[in-house]
Length: 189
Image 1 (cartoon, one colour):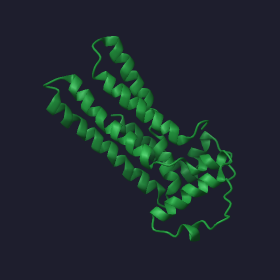
Image 2: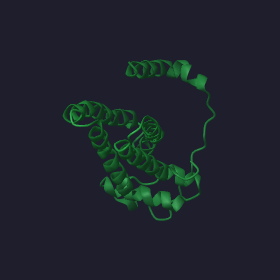
Image 3: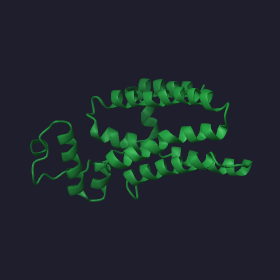
Image 4: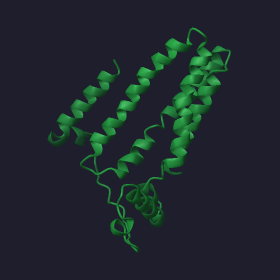
């Protein structure tokens, strides 16, 4: 959170794209390890756009919409073997280059459409920029931004609650926590 969420997201997209393409041109074992490692570094930052999206979703619908986004991962997982079946007979280099195309497209779309996190802007005392982004989001969603965020409105950051890891196992959250853990463990197999 030092530089903002949007720059980190864009940097990760660029890292994945550039090193994904470079993988297609490497000719040795060690350069291959380095390029794939760097792709993995970039993948580590791909949770950031989900965080930004969550800030714009109503609390009651947030879980459902974020779960629907996960279907893109499923589609991508189905797309990779299809691309492999069409290109691996020619060259694994071609396969890797084809797989980098969606990363480039996503980085471009992200640069054009993903705003900075309003919550992060608030945490940096940049309230007017946060309100500006929220007004644009209201307009995009067919709302009158002047009704939703009238001129002169001030937004204050929520006070953070003190929590611990063990709160996930308290009766209120235990069933959801165990279900999510089971789902994620299941994804690994």
